[in-house]
Length: 355
Image (cartoon, rainbow, N blue to C red):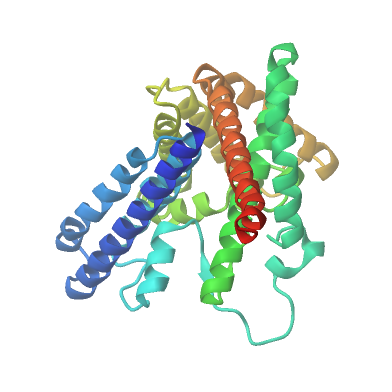
């Protein structure tokens, strides 16, 4: 049963990959032939619709959630920017670069010719996706998944710490693996996506410069910039957090098949209001600011406390931990079945050779 499920997911992955390549070939050609504006947007809408439909082809939360994030969120926003004639997609890119840029959570940059190490390559920077980080993250995640079995005996704080560690390490493992693939196949670098969020000294620092950087990188040109230009910085910040909250609701729906509760959107709207207030306060020179030794724990306490209140309950009610645990057990069973099959084949070899 588990092996059949994984075979089905791999088959869906191959079909989805072929569909993405075909759609991005069409999108690149359409963007080259049609000038930015309403006509290009209309031409790109079929590709946007395909990106939103592909996650439904998967039956596991891992594949469905990853493809929804890569394609339905980041990919569609990149296509909408392309319709307006803005990056990161451009029809002048080669087809492989265009496809990878559109369908993966990466921000490409050409490697410099100098021998100096980049941030991604410097283990001392704490921001790269080196092999050590990938191995450590991959080794710790199974222990976190095992700990879910004891969640009924955990306090809320312990459960939140478990969820936070799971999200953080999964992000490190997933993006590190993507970086290794992209760097090896295309010979290009990927910008760091997480920059030590546990050192954030403000909400602006946490959301804008440290946590899940691919999201603010796509929301700045698509939401914050246009709204800010017309209505001011506070409106741009609020619009950005509102869109982020709504997209998180969509991601949760893809993953758990649960209708939106509004709590996740409320979480991001609250953080948007507080971030805008921080910006207003920071514009007043000479006003009191807490020292970093105080600002960091206050920031983390606010993020964690509001997460317990508004963000994590949606995950708990949706049974995300149970879904992940079931899928991991299924994966382990599939690996055990494959191991028995390989062991049986190895044992049959000497027998056949003696006949």
